[in-house]
Length: 460
Ligand SMILES: [Zn+2]
Image (cartoon, rainbow, N blue to C red):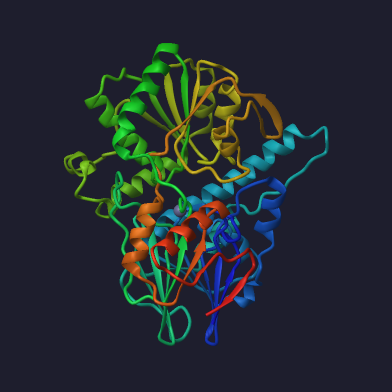
């Protein structure tokens, strides 16, 4: 069989798409949005390295937009077969894709408005109708139960501990077993359970987002966060937090609440300005069984029917309330999406706050290359938002504690546990991450390690 790497390969971290081609049919694993420079993104998100009729089934690992974000494009181009996912991923994907559609329509409208004079016009990739059409092909499957997307190809989901509903995926074809990790969580994290894997694996396709480095230990998180909050309170500034609506926002809310109880932190109003975060938080409450019942969070949520709802946190859904935040003075915390500052309401908050030195932009997630989030993280003094230049006067801080991805030592532990017999393929990592991880794998005695390029076909 052949694995064709059609995204999140060759040093890319977004746009996951892996096509496994067999005599019985072809299965696409994930169908994610590429995020980066505008022109390259448009090109890659409209033109796939396969045609829809080459694909006999789609299997989705989890609901992050870089793993599901172009499903509507695939369906728009004529794909009419099943899309397999877990029930939680099904629920979350609907929210994520409708939100993505709305963002693209709104951003295109806003971009076109401010560029009216210079004649620049962009089109959204898809709208809510296109997203809804894709839902018609969703097929829910249970974790740990075998299903057959094409004849005699057995697929099974295990918990990936990365975001709610996320799965590692085992694929068995003619006696050969491949394990695709999707994205994998850490051994110790704030909310979710530790990842699990199938046994007797021949080939491993593994994400390497943090393949060359470790995360800062979670234990210091509260001190740092408390310092940042106290500084904003003193300066009457705003703390702007770009955050993925799924997982990260819930982790931050949980931390904020425990800080209020344990540390000397002044009361500060918190606005969660993302309609999607509100909906995702409801799904967390509904599927609290996915949460790890052996950590701090448990004690927290056990007696609380609404563990992410607190009287001082205001969840904002409508646009008017969101815009009203621009005119309100600090101190306050605004948590908004998108996580890498590539679209959505966070762009408006940054536009309004970034030129004021009382404010703090707090980065809490992975920022892919060529995104606005990465430029801020790298210390840019001037940035473009909606194509217009802004000076960065607010302080930009990063906290690496929160990652939903395994760091290097976790990844190595997982590979040892999986112990693939025939080969390891490294995806979903910048080239320096993949190279760093390859070296550590070799130091640990693993052989046949490949770093596939974008569009490369590997025969196994
Ligand atoms: Zn992910």
